[in-house]
Length: 200
Ligand SMILES: [Zn+2]
Image 1 (spheres, rainbow, N blue to C red):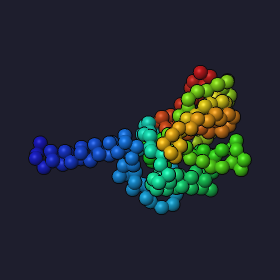
Image 2: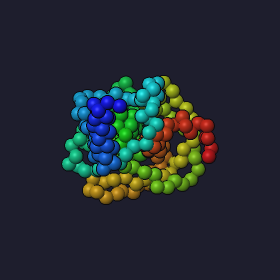
Image 3: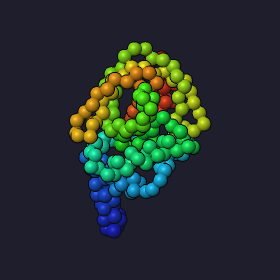
Image 4: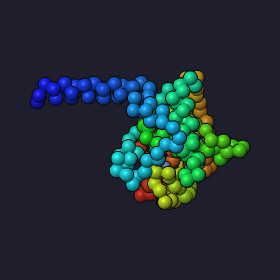
């Protein structure tokens, strides 16, 4: 191995180390910052593309919920813009779908007045209750397809608030299905994975 090659390898590993450290410290990496800085709609990753598919299968990292974090606010704005684009018309989207492995989802709250679109940082499902019910689901990352999926109808969520604390909330009905679908994305799970083991 030449000295130049060894040096290059060392520099590359250091850069990779810095990126991984940033990811684990809930900070955006340079690559993520570049993506957030772009303008307009974001590209939605789909399972039809091999590289996209690989990324959609990876687990995401937490991100610091801080209202002074302009990058996070910009990412939320652009992700919402992408979800509500007339060609997409989604009721939910997760950050991995726009290329960032971050625990951030957008959900249209169909259970609330005027169905507001809201962002949730570091969401987790704490508990589920009741029986699973079958319903039709589609996904922006799985174009031109929809399937019947069994889901819980009553869940308890926990997510970060903007002051460093946690919020717990109970969500029921179809809106809880949207949360389950989007939180699955943060764990590299797609709705088609539930088809084989429907009634577990
Ligand atoms: Zn989806």
